[in-house]
Image 1 (cartoon, rainbow, N blue to C red):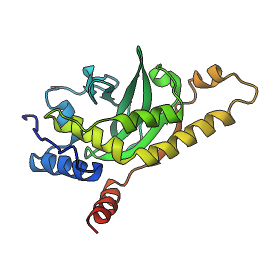
Image 2 (cartoon, one colour):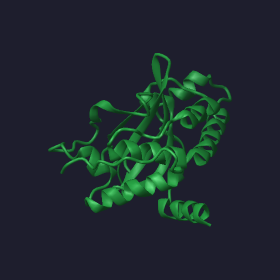
Image 3 (cartoon, one colour):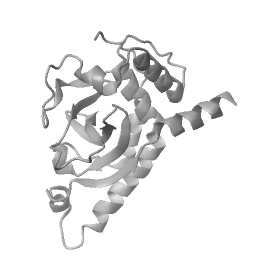
Length: 209
């Protein structure tokens, strides 16, 4: 399968850009997961794809995709994208984006720090990074899809970061912050389901009214 080339106009709102990405992938009988794995002969659970991680957002963002064993995963989930933003010399994990068996978004997940072992950034810092994310210029539909999805869900990600911080704060009684963030019995700290069709319908109807 050849990569899908598409150029989104910078002035288009995120919902319109995302809809264009989905139409382009649909026309090629593809989806974001297939786009990422199209040159991978065998998909192995636990392995990160691609290597090195996928760069986007003018090299200020990174993403990789992987899956857990069926014993650990939601039966609806095929795998998930982990999304990182640059923080000086390091990287901070924003969220995981779980994908269903059809290669469509299932839910956003905030993971504990030990899961990706990167910088732990506060809500406002992470939201500022999304706000600064420019429309994708690369002729690559997956990078454009990731960029527009992050921009579209910025408000919900803010709410989810609030839920993340509230959960961590609630676990601090008698424990240090580092102990909580390194607690390997705590994988997910907050999650939010995604109904992308409803989200796009609401956004595009509002834009055209």
